[in-house]
Length: 223
Ligand SMILES: *Cc1c(COP(=O)(O)O)cnc(C)c1O
Image 1 (cartoon, rainbow, N blue to C red):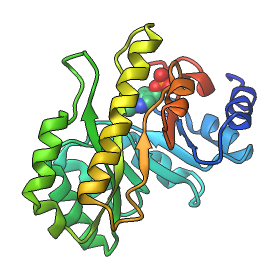
Image 2 (cartoon, rainbow, N blue to C red; image 1 turned 180 degrees about the horizontal axis):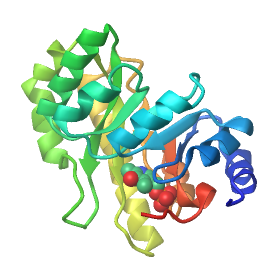
Image 3 (cartoon, protein in one colour; image 1 turned 90 degrees about the vertical axis):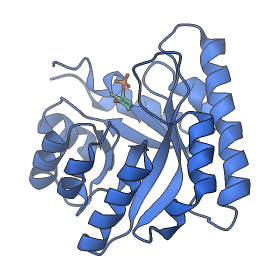
Image 4 (cartoon, rainbow, N blue to C red; image 1 turned 45 degrees about the vertical axis):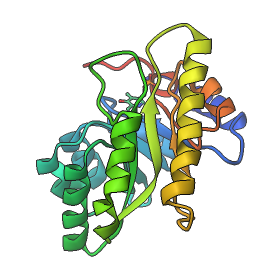
């Protein structure tokens, strides 16, 4: 088994108090999660619904499960009863379905709005303009079983650290702008989820509050 504890402790040792670590355990077996759990880690990120449901049944109930992948509306119902946060909300339709399932379970579900900031075409998420239009439209305000806690994004897949920094910086400024315009009386709107294994130190410098780190902790994924 990959040595999970050493990299986990290294990351945690350097983490400012304002930043929380989501240990991304997708494609890794339950034993890896148990090892990290034994070292005190409680927040885990998964991106496939069936895999998350299986792991949630098997593993300790005080784990906070964050769903970080693209979520199809027809699968919200499987994770709604227990999920701690849904990171990648990229449409009003999905937000409405989360609200519907939250109501069924009698719980308010924490969500982040996914921004598309990377150069790659394939990644999901709202453009800055689309997100602003959705917020202006206002329908999201009538979803009492959804708690919008902030934004989530991924930087371009590049070695150009200044380009990555610029993308995170832009996302942070946009976060402040919409906080001011739409969420100024919502103390829960405070999360910026960005930073992965290769770019989380930059993300922290650029104001991330939730880093999502997988391979650096658990090793390469076997698909
Ligand atoms: C897989 C994944 C991560 C973690 O990626 P690593 O490079 O392994 O740290 C972070 N965020 C999302 C959305 C992911 O799908």
